[in-house]
Image (tube, rainbow over all chains, first blue to last red; front, top):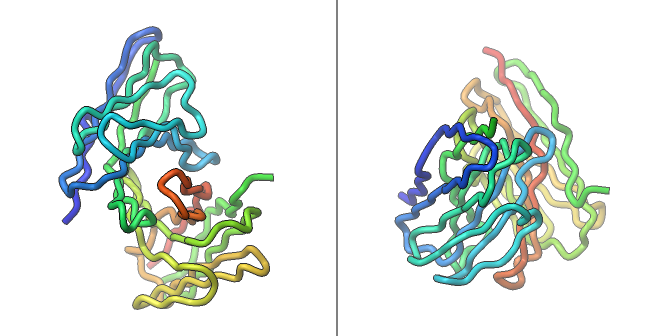
Length: 113
Length: 113
């Protein structure tokens, strides 16, 4: 059973803080993704990575950066948190040969005050 | 116009009803069409995927794709209270690793016992 875990279920941070969200998958998947999910807007892709140390911008990368030093781990960094980054953050991974099969983590509900 | 449109609902049906969930899209390059189910406070999970046009059945669930109309549907037969969730359609060309998956905003479904 594929498992994608995220470091926190709920986080509350202050404006201007640096925030780290970590994602780990245990199925040796090549591709990993970070999304944010907001009511009425659906899932929006922030960044993705198809290999270690590789990263590609998604649709809304501004204010975020990522790191992938190991195949199983993909980190999302909010350099200076702002209130408009309050959201649900979802990590996902896919096997290279079945890119339509995204496995999601449980999500991190981030509130920036 | 958004690339993928989906009626957000909420949709409320009695147990045993047939449910029809729909999405429309504008990008004719989409070839893979997925349906994800998301329970409250959980990450989405893949229900079914279809490649190109046609129907696909899995138990009580049937996915239908009409590329000529740019319209996809998910039918749930004999709906159960455990089907209560948000259903997200998703689609992509998936010709390369760089092709993103675009998600609809989701339809919230409640099946009333």
